[in-house]
Image (tube, rainbow, N blue to C red; front, side):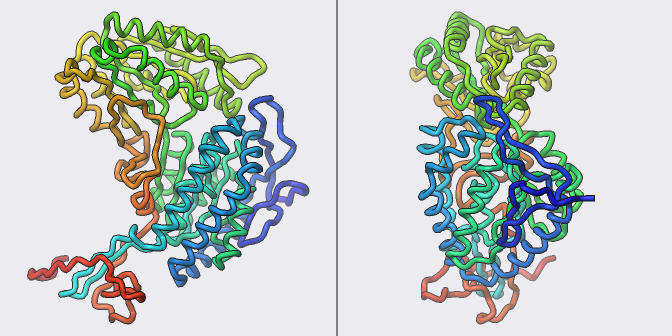
Length: 530
């Protein structure tokens, strides 16, 4: 039987902060000190979920009746709330994640989050994401509309930009007119709680339903599966580990619920010999910056380097190892990340990878020494699954091939990834190799880069932050980039023969302000098919 735990942090249900019905609780920790933080957070029982789902379903009905400008006003008001509380938010997140206040949190991630919310507001106001199509001859009209309550599961490594009540999935779900049930990541529950407080203030300011944004902290595995498969849920956005994501996907798939997953990616970087000969030291610098940024805890971290055997590659490996050994190892997000990283390194070395440097957990700290491993392409090809074990953190594996054909075989054996990079000479020396390898690489990634490392993910309409499995659960969608990221949380609705005055404003020949919406007169002459 669940009990109410006194003195635990409150959950947000239908616009009200209240104590959870819970059978246990947890604490987050400060990774920099390995000390447990004093606040305790509840593991909610199903009764909490039932109340949250009922409130979200009611809010979804109310949101469908509101003008899109009101939803945009909420997103803008929320962006202003975050902007006014940058210092406090950064301090809370620093205590829970050890990510530096400056520049990482206050100067980079929080401004990115604010900008993302404002882009979502613009898309909501214009309805550009909805892709209206109008066949005036047959009087058939269609567009994307809200799908219903969206559950968002945030990751541990980006408490703001991908957070469950602030990040890209959140912004996209709200912009398309859906309420959000946020499930906080247990690494930074206090940060998420503060964001939810600001979101609640913005809902009041803009007049949205109180249950537009709700927050719970943790669930049992069974209740998490039950939540994502509930009939009231429209869709799910998830960023995190492959194991947990696939468990949720299994439950969501069984109930027919669309779930959008970002899971794991080793992000292969191909270094062609002409590029290394031409500018090897610059490539070392770029790789070091990318590989050790945020202690390697980026989903686009360059975890796999592919190169041809030769002096230029030897110099690259030696230089990276020297720089890895001299650079102080950063703090990982949690002891769980530390354990996972050391286990992955052990798996790679047990399979036959050579440990060039690093590989040791640092006693008394949430850190692992900067790690570089190396393996022959022939060995990689013999067991590609194990050599693609994701070492989430400050570790990378270099695969050395004897020929371009062998590099091609390595690329063919790769799982799906978010990104793939190719460095080539500027004088054309690598053009033949590039022509052979690029088509193979691009077939298995969501974003192909030339002569740059993969860690930056611009919030651009042209961005694809997605890719084939296991980088995501579906290769046709992106978690970053508006309007495409919003389409995940819309359902296509067709209005066939509906009277003009009964159509949504978006599908009328002219909107209420007199501006003509984008219309396509298909002017079909064939008979109906279907």
